[in-house]
Each structure stands twice: as structure tokens, then as C-alpha cells.
Amino acid sequence: MREIVFDTETTGLDPNAGHRVVEIGCVELINHMPTGETRQWYLNPQRDMPEEAFNVHGLSEDFLADKPLFSVVVEEFLAFVDGATLIAHNANFDLRFLNAELAAVDRPNLPKDKVLDTIALARGKNIGAGQLSLNALCRRFDIDLSVRAKHGALLDAELLAEVYLELIGGRQPGLVLAAESKDPKTAAQDAERQTRPPRSHAPTVEEAAAHQAFIEKIDDPIWKK
Image (cartoon, rainbow, N blue to C red; front, side, top):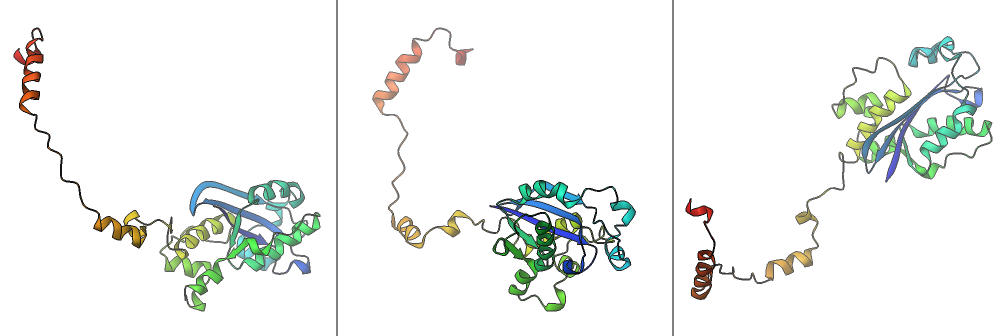
């Protein structure tokens, strides 16, 4: 099973108000294990950077001025996420922005039924509403936050991947010992099965005599040296 944990940084809160994506970060998981494959795209939004947004992620107009447009990286992005379940924190926010960018370049939306929201997952674990931010969940699971001075799409996706794995029960959540997973009927049959008595390995008199005759034919055996 392939999953992509992703995050975006933007110029604001509403794509309908002209705000744009300025960074996308993705982390690949296979069978709930990080593969080491990541992707990060900085994007030129072709507009100014509001001070409120800059204070969140620190991406300035000057820094983004020479970065590619979304239209340049869209095929690479779509190829990387193709076929995977997408995982995001407050997924509706990221999905609205990415789908707005996709619509602007005549590409289909990312389907909502392929997106898992870790906030909803945390709520299902009865984690309190005041503890659902990424920072709060990292602290809850003792995940190091020292590198998160500001938001960053790839950094936050990497942190979220760790949070996600904790929310689903740790790495390889489906791994159980064979004895624990055995069908009860099979286990009962095994318990009732008669154990065969151990086979005797002592040689018969005839076998011992034949062996002695054989070794006497060996010239200068090593065990006589």
C-alpha cells in the first residue's frame, strides 16, 4: 500500500481570494513505512507575499521570484502522487488550494475519497480538540519539534508522517505474531493432535557390525593419527 503524506504553504487562507500555493512537500510511505522518497517544490505565486503569511513560513517574494510556476511542476507532482492515498493535516485546506491550482492549468481535481485527514483520525482516537494541532500531536507522541522554527511544507509533512504512524498504532500496525493470529479452530486442532514419539537413533547390532567392517577397510584413517 502506497501513501503520500503532504503539506502546502500558501500566500493566505482562501484560494478564491487569489491566494496561491508557494510550497508543496511530500513524503512517501509503503505499507506504513517511510521509504526515504520525498518531494519538495517551491513555487512562484506571481503575486505579493502578505506579511501574515510570511511570518508563518518565512518565504519571501524575493526568494520565490526565480522558482517555477505550478504549471511547470504539475506533471511531476501528479506522477508522484498517482495511485496513492493522500494524507494531510486539516486536509480540506490543502486540498482546496491544490485543486484550485490544478483547475487553473486544466487538470482534474484530486479526489476527496483518496484523502485522509489526520485531524479526523485524531478525533477518532478521542484526542481532545485542543490537542489537534500538529505541534500538539508531536508533543503528545514525543516527536522532536526543535527544527520547526517556522512552518515548511516538507518539514511539516515529515513530522506529520511520524504523527500519522503513531495515530494508526505505530509502524507496521498490522504486524502480529503468528501464534496470536492463528485461527482458533486451527489452534485447537494443534493442541489435540497426538505428538509422535521421538525416533530412536541408536544403531542395531547388525548396523554397528557393518559400520565397523567398513571403517577397517580405510587405509590410514585420520582418527588413528
